[in-house]
Length: 366
Ligand SMILES: Cc1cc2nc3c(=O)[nH]c(=O)nc-3n(C[C@H](O)[C@H](O)[C@H](O)COP(=O)(O)OP(=O)(O)OC[C@H]3O[C@@H](n4cnc5c(N)ncnc54)[C@H](O)[C@@H]3O)c2cc1C
Image (cartoon, rainbow, N blue to C red; front, side):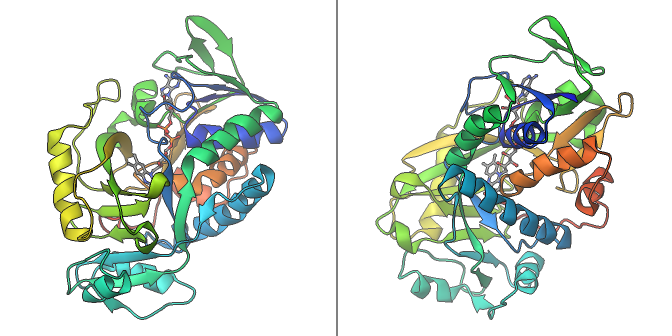
């Protein structure tokens, strides 16, 4: 089948690789250059959680994705995930932290926040009364390396990539306008991240685009700082980053954005990041070495939205962000194949129905 994939972030790349491997004639289109920093997939690291607290659907998805990450690692000849362990934390009684504990295959006891200072030998501090669950099956994905692998591997399987090639909006069927030229396909998959609502306006009301800023902090003790996901109002999360730095961001702070006009990180972002860094990373310089902006595309219940267009059933919206999609990327290619073959798995069906039965559990997602 002749398939177009619009957008070459982590979702589009995974879809192109899998469909090309399955023998489809795949063309992937990206409006910017490889490795650009204007969407959602750039940056060196992402958090991997094998027993996520967002519900049973995501626990099943995490098992699927973990097996596929091993396949990618085998092909690439290098690991993509470093299993560092992590701390799932939140105010006492946090449903998210409790869900992480019950999803865990080897549930440890719940700790109080005051234990973290000793556990990290003073490198990290959390509010003393918080619930904290130490999750071993949690780690850091080498995100840059994973994207670079797919950019190399998918063309080996026959995928054709066009960068700096913008698909005209709106998409109205399986004939696309690529830089003014009409190109016809049998099916179109729109993995356009924050731009998806512009390309497929029928979904725009369900896809809120949000600006996010992350800060990179210099640490004296990078090995002592684990992944952390906080179920607080800000949705603070942190993870080791390359160069001995620690990356820190907010799941829940940042305003609405037009993906074509995003404000660069500024002094107000720095002040907010520094304020939280000062509290959580007491032995470190609270001034970020650098900052980067990123876009979330958030659905009302924070589940992925994967659905065919009502008017053009061979056009599929593939929106897999809400701030927690990277870890599941290897499954996205399988989902695209299931859709083309009209054999959706229960997991894909759940997202096609709008994530029925999956509840939003709190601010934490990474
Ligand atoms: C700050 C931040 C932290 C995150 N942390 C984590 C984490 O720790 N763990 C985790 O699992 N997930 C995390 N996520 C979520 C994860 O990164 C996203 O789910 C994922 O990157 C989404 O990828 P995507 O391919 O759907 O979107 P994108 O990466 O945005 O890709 C869409 C692409 O489509 C292109 N495009 C758009 N319109 C057109 C057009 N008209 N023509 C051609 N190309 C077009 C864009 O240029 C873009 O490259 C985080 C996200 C952010 C922003």
